[in-house]
Image (cartoon, rainbow, N blue to C red; front, top):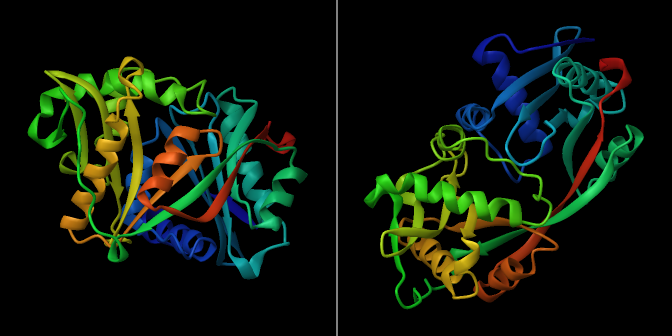
Length: 305
């Protein structure tokens, strides 16, 4: 078995096809996959080939959410239990070890016992859980947007100069999400390039809560080529001093109304189980659970260190 980086767009497309076979309900295109990589501070993709057949793929990347790199491994369903996943894990571990990392972050679907077993076998332990929820826009009416007194909701496209204000919101909001306490937003330029300007990030689909000229909250969608009628919630964040005033609700209502008006049929989001305020807000708007993720942290493979 050969474990190596993909050689060109055609082989990268094989990784995407394997990834989509693992997650058929959440497909991506090659363009989406590339855009996801553009959000990483650094990344490394691997392809597993066995006698000329592509049987697995993997990605490891460094983002702002945790101090450790994130590891993703996908093995074609018919090729499992042949050591493909372990071989890819060794390759990802080597990349991480070369950069001084001793641990990796990962997630598995909670209804995939084989993925959970694989993670446990390699020493990973649970660090948190998220619910994946969806809102069927074809069965709901757009909500009224009732911004709190003194708050105006606009799109970032209308006021692009507010970028630094959005960064200040992110610096307070992201670390306060349960499970993200060690998040580190390195710099404004880094955050802007990787978190706000990838192919799936649109200023017209990013909504800002203004108090005068101060950005006190924002929410944004992540949009994909593969799912043109589905919009994914990325973040809804409010500065600490402005919370519990209804700003998050007004931002989410604005997103739902915008998605209705632009022909989307479904919204998807994820909630950390410990994040009670956003869970209640999504329940109020009618989001329903359809899946769940288990977040894990574990050591790099000794074969890669």
